[in-house]
Structures are given as structure tokens and as C-alpha cells.
Image: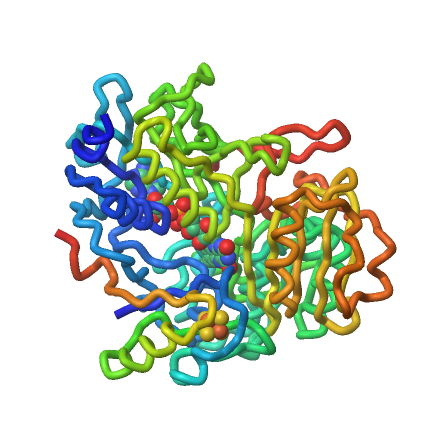
Amino acid sequence: MRIVVDLNRCQGYAQCVFFAPDLFELHGEEALLYDPAVPEERLEAVRQAAAACPVQAILVGEEVSSRVR
Amino acid sequence: MSDDLREGRIVIVGASLAGLRAAETLREEGFTGSLTVVGDEPHPPYDRPPLTKQVLLGKAAATAVGLPMRRDPEAEWRLGVRASGLDTVEKQVLLADGESLPYDRLLIATGTRARPWPDAEQGALDGVFTVRTVDDAGRLAERLDAGPSRVLVIGGGFTGSEIASACRERGIEVTLTERGAAPLVGALGGVLSIFADRLQRHHGVDLRCGVTVTALRGDGHGRFTGAELSDGSQVEADIAVVALGAVRNTEWLADSGLAAGPRGVACDAGCRAFDMYGIVTDDVFVAGDVSRFPHPLYEYQMMSLEHWGNAVEQAKVAAHNMANPGPRRRPHLSVPTFWSSQFGLNIKSVGVPTFSDHLVIAQGSLEQGRLVAVYGYRGRITAAVTINMAKWLEYYRHLIETAAPFPPAPEAADRSAAASFPIHSDVPDPAVLSHGPTVTLTGHLPDRRLTRVWPTG
Ligand SMILES: Cc1cc2nc3c(=O)[nH]c(=O)nc-3n(C[C@H](O)[C@H](O)[C@H](O)COP(=O)(O)OP(=O)(O)OC[C@H]3O[C@@H](n4cnc5c(N)ncnc54)[C@H](O)[C@@H]3O)c2cc1C
Ligand code: SF4
């Protein structure tokens, strides 16, 4: 699974960092850095992070590669 | 009529951010026909912004940036094959492998590529890079892992500045050259570029502004060893990153009869392409970095935006309009937004900072390293840029959308003392920059020239 964060929307509230500090980190005061590749065992934490984001900036989904025909 | 538009054959050329988001939206809009997405890269759609951030910092693998789908667009993906031409009369896309794909409606989303170093032989030296694709970023990240003695970054726009930032954070020596007076001057104007200048020097970048790189040197065995600058000095380095802006991928449309060229493919506010006579088509649509479209907030000038958010928003509008008849169509009016992170700072903008004559620092200050700069043109707010004060952007977006007067009224409690003194925004002519502008206004303001078109190289 992959994530992408709409950083135009992200306000640096850091709720996601709280749920999955191994995948989301604040770089300086406000700039969010994240690992786009979600290991299977962290999927639940990432879903919680996405649900907790106050501006709904985190999209979790399958990447296209698994569907290329 | 509306049923017809939900059926038939749609082809999307360009399998990246705009192409994927448009494909998803077509299905959300009830399109049940056949959908084919053509992309010349072998990779499925991936996200480019992390390439100069997480990937160069070594925090994410270049192979990890695949874009998640919002939903499965149930498309046929034709990856690794280039569209080589377009026949708008027979309504088919010609592919480089000789096949042709018939369509009822077409979306052009071929984006841009990195502007290469002008001298092909020098550009081919081992150690010379551009960063646009995962392959570029993956190879550069590997070289950075090997601990180069110095990296030369050519061009001080957002991309070049982010690359310099990633190198410094990894303890790698960096020289950055910029033809303009300071980094980011082309995007943010003179005042904030002074801030960017200080920021880079503070983080140990060997910054050379007002100079150009005149030649890249090799060791005689095809390895890059350094560069000559226009001031007569030389830089020894084992990697050079060419960050001279982008070239729009429109060559494949040269014989299509569409209004396509180095400035992009012109379209109307509903994303429908214009033909070369300026007549709007109704079966060819455009979205993302390759497009140029009129924006009512900026005097209907034709704008090209190399912005992630624009690719997403415009793709959704284009897809909606491809699946809906005239009266139900929507215009693409969203206010441009952009972010960059570099040297630990979050730089965001809303509106078009280069469309300005004055600015005020409304909150914070250059000294505090956090601020809101509000830009105005002829007494109206046209843009705002925040550095580590992103929470203010929504407020100023609303003021921009409602054409609020400039300088802004004293609403904000923590307004800075400088807020009442508009200063000249000092936006340079793009011709003086190393890198291409990431926002191009292709119309003309009476008092300024804001466009420059390079021959494709
Ligand atoms: C390193 C980097 C960092 C960035 N950082 C930011 C940032 O921080 N913030 C921000 O707002 N924006 C950023 N951007 C810009 C953002 O990534 C782009 O705006 C976005 O990728 C545009 O998407 P697109 O789909 O329109 O075009 P593109 O992503 O350029 O995709 C076009 C696709 O079409 C393919 N193609 C071209 N010609 C053909 C052809 N003839 N046939 C078939 N396929 C073809 C291309 O190979 C490419 O895969 C960054 C870009 C880069 C490169
Ligand atoms: S929770 Fe949402 S707004 Fe907050 S830092 Fe994460 S992505 Fe950004």
C-alpha cells in the first residue's frame, strides 16, 4: 500500500506523527516528511492516522502497479 | 446526450498525476466506456515531489513513490510506449510502436520534462544529472550515498534549492549557481529571495548568484570533474545537477493542428483544447503541467502552472467535463497553491506571487524566520507566501478569491510592524534567471514582460 499527503492542505497538526511516528515526521516546525511505502503491518496505524488528520490530507490506497494489464 | 458521454472510448496520454486523477474521476462521473492510459515511462503513476525531498534525503526509496489510487479506474494501462502523433480528423492517437488508438474523447496530460544541459556532450558526462523521474532520483540518491566531495547545483529555483538542501542535510558540500540576484527570486520576488539567500548561506551552501555556468568539464574518460563559471572562477565537483526548469512535452502534437508549442497546449477554462486557429475543440481536453489556461483572477491571462495541486484539480475538472454535456460543465477556477520544503522550512504559497507590484510582510519577519508575505497588484491582493506560518494561507486564499484590497486590512492580531509599509515586490523578468519559472504568465501586463520561451533542446 502507498500513501500520498496533499501538502497544500496539510497544516502540520502532526496527528499523523502521533499515530505512526515511523512513517510521518515533522521536519523543522511545520514541514511534513513521510514514507510513501506502507509496510503491511503498519496499515492499521496509517489508516488511523488518515482518519485522524483534521484536514483529510492523507490518501491511502493501492498503487497502480498491481492492476496493470 | 448525457448518456452518450458516459460511453464510448476515452484515451488519456500521460500516465502520471493528472492522468491517474482524471481516470479515477471519469469512473466517479459514471463513465462506463473503454479507458486507455498511455505513458512513455515504464512505471505506473508515481509522485514527483518526494524525489527531491524524502528520496534524496535517503528517507524513502525511489521505488517507493508510486501514487495510491483513490479508486480503481479500470483502465488499460499502456506503459513504456510513447504517443508519437495525433490525428484529430480520424480521431486517433499514434503510438511509437506503430499502433494507433481510436478515441471519442482524448485527454492530453503529457506534463513536462527536465530542461537538459544545452551542450549534449557535456550533459552526457558521467556525474551530470537532472531530476524529473524516479530513475533520475534513484541514480542521484545512489551517488549521494557514495559520499561525493562536492555537488554543483545549477539553477536556484525550487528544485535546485531543494536539492542543495538535501545535500547539506546529509553533510555534503554544495555549490549552487543562479543567474538571477538570489535563489527563488523568480518565484517569490526580491524580498523573500534575500531571505532564501541568507538561509542557504547559513546552512553552508557555497552560493554564487549573478553568474552562469559556461562549461562542464570532464576528465577525458567521460567523468564530470568540475565547471567553469562566467566570472572566470572554477568549481571542482564530482556531481552536477542541472536544475534549469522544465520543457513542456508537446512535440508529439506538432502536426495535430492544436494550439500546442513550447508554452504548452492552450485550452479554455473548461480544459478543452484550442486548435491552431484559436477555435475550441470539444473532444480534446488538457490537464496538468502541459496545459495553459485562462484564469479570471489573473485578468484571464493564459497561465501555466508546474504545481502538483493544479494537476489534481484540473484533471478532475477535465474528467468531469469529458463525461458531462455543456450546461453541466464546470470551469477550472481554483486558486493556485504550492508548497516546498527546504532547509527545515515549510514554504507555501497561494495565488500567483509574480503577479504583483508590491508586498507587505503581514505577520512575522525575515529575522524570525517565519512570516506571511502578502502580494498585491494595483491595489488588490493577488498572492500570499508563508514560511512556517501555513495556518494563515486559508485566510489569504479567501481574500484573493474575493479580490480584497491591498494592503490587507489590519485583521490579524499578531500583525507585524512592517505590515503597513508596502514595498516593491521586485519580480524579475524571467529572462534573467537560470531556471525556468514554475508559474508562467503568458499574457502581457502593460508595465512588464512576464514571459520567455526557450527553444526546445
Ligand atoms: C523533483 C520535483 C519536485 C516537485 N516538487 C513539487 C512541490 O514540492 N510542490 C508542488 O506543488 N509541485 C512539485 N512538483 C511539480 C509536480 O510534480 C507536477 O506539477 C506534477 O507532476 C504534474 O503532473 P502531470 O501529470 O501534469 O505531469 P507529469 O508528472 O510531468 O507527467 C506527464 C507524464 O506524461 C509522460 N509523457 C510525456 N510525453 C508523452 C508521450 N508523447 N507519450 C506518452 N507519455 C508521455 C511523461 O513521461 C510523464 O510520465 C515537483 C516536480 C518535480 C519533478
Ligand atoms: S495529521 Fe494531517 S494536517 Fe496534520 S501533519 Fe499529518 S497530514 Fe498534516
